[in-house]
Image 1 (cartoon, rainbow, N blue to C red):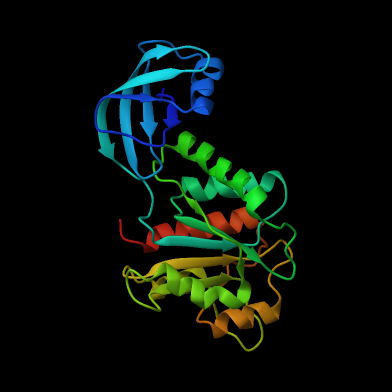
Image 2 (image 1 turned 60 degrees about the vertical axis):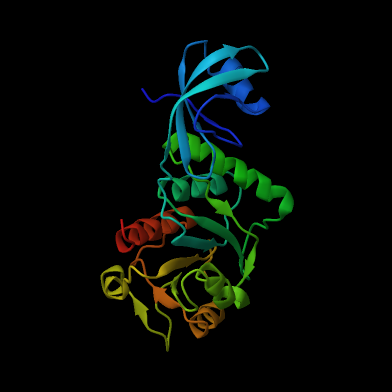
Length: 252
């Protein structure tokens, strides 16, 4: 059985660590951890440590570090998504799948058919979902929740992702069926464009899909259209499908 995992703001190579209040509560009151238990601490930056609980009460947990390693378990800043987020619990489902599949960042995408608005207030909830998913799946670097994005800013956003390589080094794929006058690729055809030196940005529309005008707007900014087949996939399914595809394209 995996050891319980707790997020800490700073993770030294040795010594002791006081768990944050919320994590201490989770360890003592929810998981009923005890003195001498082995736990895993991670700092959200990719570092992970095995540690032993030295003392524990209702509000305070102190753990002594046994060993520390760098093990991010993500795609090292290469896999990014902009998604017109669904409503309610489906937002949590979407976040969980992206975190589990190693996606590096998520930007809520504003479209004409968007059903949910993500602002500073509810972005904190999405960040909480990210932490919970990281604790569950063993990932040690936090997936970034970035500010909301408009369709007109896709190219600028893609270039900002690629700044540490060069402009136009981010390949943009918009998930949508073929529309008149535009070329759409299926998954097998899209494989021919895989370039391990590029980063990837996938655009996932709302439940009602992108409008044709939005697709053309994205294509004018350098996006290619990716069709996932004849069946209509829900937002979280389409995002997970694209994340798996990105995993296959990117270097290990």
